[in-house]
Image 1: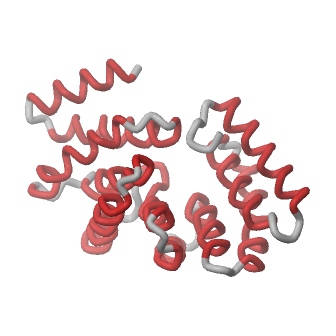
Image 2: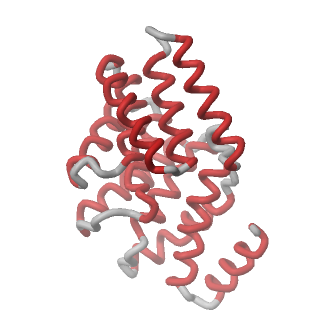
Amino acid sequence: ELASLRAAFRCAVDASELDDAAVIATEAGFLGYATDNLEPLAWAEELIPVAAARAHPRLSALQALAGQCWMQWRTEDAVRFSDSAARTLSSTQQPHLPFGIQGLPGAAYMASGEPHRAEQWYQSCLELHSGEMLLDKVGLVLALVATGNPDLARELGAGVVHEADRSDNAYTISFALMAHGYALFDVDPVSAIEAFRRGADIAERSGNRAIH
């Protein structure tokens, strides 16, 4: 429950237990992001100064999650946190973030009207991880649509949906279907709406309010 997580986070902060507080903030932050409960994103933001001072291994995750404050219409702050996450990841050569969320800065760039930056970020993530991160591929599909490359987005999107279906991960499947729907919309609106409906149904049944 959120109340229990909030109490645990406050207890860890008051006791100066950064490791415990960072674990709670990142785990709850991602869950909150996926379920449209944004309070834990503020916990991640709160920890950034002390985590940066101590070069904490979860710093980039805290920055990336704080960067999702674009969902609260704080796009300038979102870009600032996302830029910090990108610098931290580059400087520490951290292999990846938990849950495969290293692509999250791209969402902030999209929300701030900078789809080309988002495309570049997703491409760099995929190159770094040999194209293995499915959420980055989904993000790239959306970025390609936004930058005016719908043909490439459709080509990539079909494969991403197939790959997501094999993952048996409801969050990834619904996200992939949403992206593929956007890529298809101009040339095949019927198939696009079918993708949207299937994705929305999966999101609703799995409790994913961020997409539904």
